[in-house]
Length: 255
Image 1 (cartoon, one colour):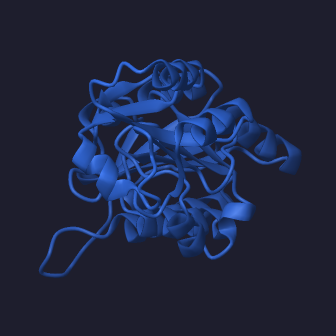
Image 2: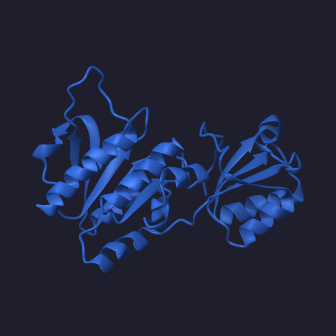
């Protein structure tokens, strides 16, 4: 369970569930909840019951001021709790690997390091589908979930490409390495992507819109790839960088 103060990600386009009974029933019915917003300092029994249920489901809990709950609330009857439900059900990492096995292909997986823009996430899921990737892995913290905006931006790809959410991206990379996967991340200081051998079981790691791939994740990648650029600015949008690198991997897999 991840317990923290509210992150900067705007949850405004997620599916909101408000009120103590509605939120508790959502958890007990097995609905996928990305985040739970709780009135900071509230010790009320029913609210604490919801918090315990959230912990059972490893849900991120954000403790916020009353003003923030009022801002998030659509009904103004939140009773101190608002849950943000995912628009789509998450897969497991094993589901993604099974997807590759079922197709008789070496695994090809996108791993996204704290992508916070829902349009970027949706576009990347769309690219992953078109490039033949077997799935996408995202972290629980500091990242957008499967909201309605993400689904729309994916142009339907979200219905076909499984997305798994993990607690620790670095640990997931280490576990997948034990199963024979290699990992490449995008970074300006890396080796030109055309000079890398990106065939076989490959995980493509894309960093967030501002900071790129985090230090620890980068240290656990086998390759650091740079995209040749000739213009006057020095960076690409995350979804565009994902597309460029993905299709170099596709080119090599077809070769």
